[in-house]
Image (cartoon, rainbow, N blue to C red; front, top):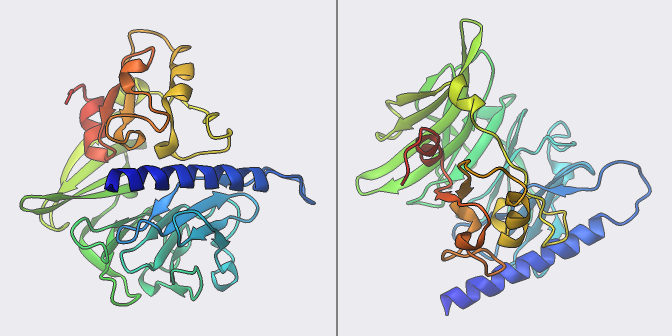
Length: 311
């Protein structure tokens, strides 16, 4: 029953995304690119609560409280105008309390589930907030990271009882881009991905902490590895061509793209594309014209895969 409900919700969301895309792409009175959805954010405690960040057209969020049956725009007038402009809304999280956290290059704001009543986080004012994630053991608790050049960056924590964000653990001179927090048998493990400058060149690193961000193990991701990696873009024609959400990638589109790619290369596929081993169109990785390796959608797994370790 739970699987059926999830499938129906996914289909409902896909249909809603397609309908929104058609509406947004209709001719308008101003020139410029059509609005582009960047991802779908689902509430960890209430999967019917959705947030769809979009770029262009001023940027912002479409919000739904009923799994995509209806959508409304956030009250963007209550947010600093320097945040809500083209391509400035970089990271969004729906917390376990229903609150919405919105981060970008000038700070972090928290609003209510209706997308109104925004409050700026004083501790993050003027800082580039590059990622926001939920705690895997307590979805009311949220974490944000910063990416300010020339400064010490790290994790800020919000416990869900108020709008205060506090520094967590130790900071380092690394511009952080991605944060993942996973549950383990002993508690939690934190993964950070970032870049730091040394001797006039960039060092790409993945940092791991198993003691609540107090101490970190650092693994360098060098230029030689980076030069061997390329990103293959997959246009989502299955849902109309205007979908930029990895989780909505289907086998039909992936097969079309992979058929034109060289044989003998390794192709890594994030596991978020699959539900119980299949894509949304019912096809499976084994149906693709090139072999793919399915990897967990986190920095640690990607680092291990790029280092040549197969799971």
